[in-house]
Length: 245
Ligand SMILES: Nc1ncnc2c1ncn2[C@@H]1O[C@H](COP(=O)(O)OP(=O)(O)OP(=O)(O)O)[C@@H](O)[C@H]1O
Image (cartoon, rainbow, N blue to C red; front, side):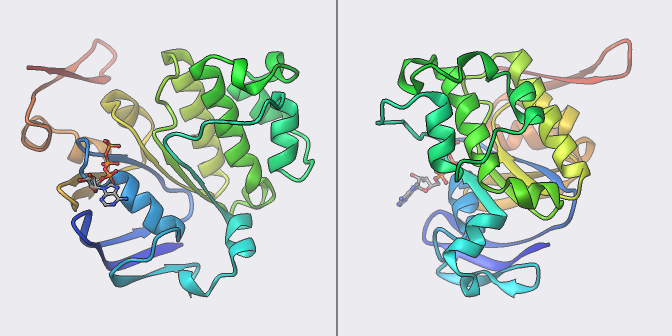
C-alpha cells in the first residue's frame, strides 16, 4: 500500500492525499502542467515534498535504502533518451542485472524482433516499448510476487493504438497479480476502458479520485480541460469520449 498525506511541492502539487492499494490500476489524468509528473516523482521518492508524508507498505518512504526502493518500485520518466550505441538486448542486460527478458513481457510489448538492433536506431514508438520493458524488468521479481509499485509517466506516448491496448492489457494483468499501478497519459478512452480508478489533477490539486464513470463526465472534463466533451454510448454500451473545440 502507498499512502500520501497532505503532500505539497512549491507551485506544483498542493496538499494532496491519496491511498493506493494492492491491484489498483490508477490512470492519472489532467491538463499539461497540472502536476502529474511532479506527483509521480514524489510517489517514487525521487523528490521530497515540502510538506506532508509518504508511506510505502507502512514505512516512511524516506526510510528506504535506495537499492531496496529500486527493487520494489519503478518510475518510467517521460523522456529517457539512450546515448549509448547498445543493442536492445545489451541495454536490457545492462540495466537489469543480466536478467532474461520475461517471455510475457517480450510478447506483450512485441520487442522480440529487434533485440539485436541498436537501440538508438529504433523508431520512437519502438524505443518507448523497450523503455517500458526496461522499467518493468527493474522490479520483475517484485512483480512476480505481486508487491511492486509501477509508476509510468506517459508510457503510451508515441505508441500506435494497437500497442497502447497491448500495454494497458499487460499492465492490468500485472495489477490483477496484486501490483499497484499509477500511469499518466492523455487518452480518455484508455482510462475509461482500463482504469480501476482515475486521479484527475488540475492546477496541482487532485480534483477527483474515483471510478471512471464518476470522473469521466462531461461537466467535469469540460471544466478541467477547458474543452468541449461529449460522451456517447455505442451499440454495445461502451462509453466513448469525444473532445472538440
Ligand atoms: N523541475 C521543476 N521545477 C520547477 N517547476 C517545475 C519543474 N518541473 C515542472 N515544473 C512546473 O510544475 C508544474 C507541473 O508540471 P508537471 O510536469 O508536473 O505537469 P504535468 O501534469 O506532468 O504536465 P504534462 O501533461 O505537460 O506532462 C508546471 O507548471 C511546470 O511548469
